Amino acid sequence: TICGIHRQRLHATLRQAAEAAGAELVTAAEVTAVRPGTPGGEPAAATWQTSTGDHTGEAGLVVAADGVRSAVRTQLFPDARPRYAGSTSWRAVISDTSFAGRLVEAWGPGTEFGALRVSDGEVYWYGEFVHPEGASFADELAAARAHFSGWAPWIRAMVAATPASQLLRHDVYHLPGGCPRYGHGRVVIIGDAAHAMLPTIGQGAATALEDGVCVGRMIAAPVNAGTGLAAALTALDQARRPRCRQLARQASLLARFGFELGAGWRQSARNTLMRLIPPGAPLRSGASITRWAP
Image (cartoon, rainbow, N blue to C red; front, top):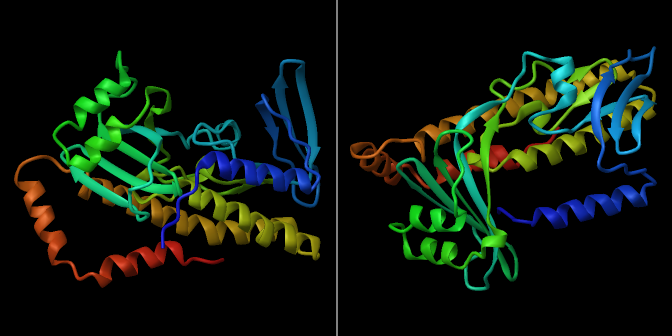
């Protein structure tokens, strides 16, 4: 089963849990430097900038979860750089009570459209399409409606029901090959900072959540029980990096087979092949993604 949740609600839940655990939250802060430190030796340190100036704090462990343009990864692994995927994506959450709860996705030449319910009264939709980097449209909503004007009625209806204030569009970036390792000194790199992948299999936020759980179960818990930090960081890297690289490869393959496929006979050939695939095969493939545990 695929379940959708609005990201704002997820953030609120995580923030409440952090505050309940006694975490001090500092917002509007830009990390400018990290000293990785040494497991069993020098502590790590992070320097960040706010409106009141520069601040530095030491830590036994720095968890770098600062996204595809990670300042921490850039400092520690400067050769691991994000790359434009060749596509951009509209996204919106709209009011809707009639759409089914399951994830539905449609492919066309150079474009994909998908939708998923995120609450009893809300549906999230996205429309990714091949386009030059950094483009802008004078009227984003008009451009989206024009782009999907020849698509299925349910797709046109969702775009038509979207208020301009709810529509977002962002270029898609990924990290080919991922970070060469997820641990460096007393720093662990997680989420898009470590393995930003194409959104075609919907595992970006999901793998970041997996990472967060694994930091607790594979680093915090064993270190508190007496395991050395270096060994714990190595164990997490050995568990997470192969999985995330596999998912990134699957995402790239699905993009090439899906919306990146050109027009004409390629579409017909792909669709015919899809009809010949036994129903159990996609289910097994999906299970390999969702039923993972360290």
